[in-house]
Image (cartoon, rainbow, N blue to C red; front, side, top):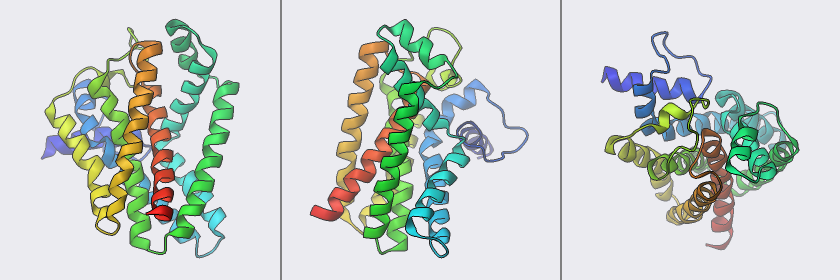
Length: 260
């Protein structure tokens, strides 16, 4: 139990800015095992984001509450996945060889493709979430929807580690230790914690189970695209996959709410 707690706190420290016990560090062995708890980080981020929205909605308009919710999610993670999304936009937008793409993604400066991508991403998220919270009249369903979106999108991202190889040949990426090895515990744990919120949500609306189809189709397309251009994935690719799959989850939810 003590070891599992350390693995969980390792995941919490790596993927968020939430303070952790002082004895927690980035030990490679624990980082490898931490992938099983990556979707639980989605529980935390999604839960905090919804609570900020819910509390803010008592004082401000829905639009302001949604913006504050998005900001809360970014602050909790330190824009970890958004940064990866921007780097992928820059790398694949400006590079035409594996070496050039990886070099651009490694650059800490944001380029035009990354900036444009982030603006469009946040604009789309804002519009989607405003429509979603207007359509949902249940606090419980709203909370579960936020949590499930973050959990399932993180499952989609981390599952790439289980099926593809890490692209870089050096230790330049901060996420490389996670990609070194895994066991069946990581696979089972990631899928269990990733799908559990969605299963609970389906108790209220069974149609929500359908969202895994477009989310994982998006995941497979992105993984194939990364494989084609850079022979695998990087940590930035995982971050971009999480962001895109989160948006696809929301879009699919809107469609299900309206037509089913």
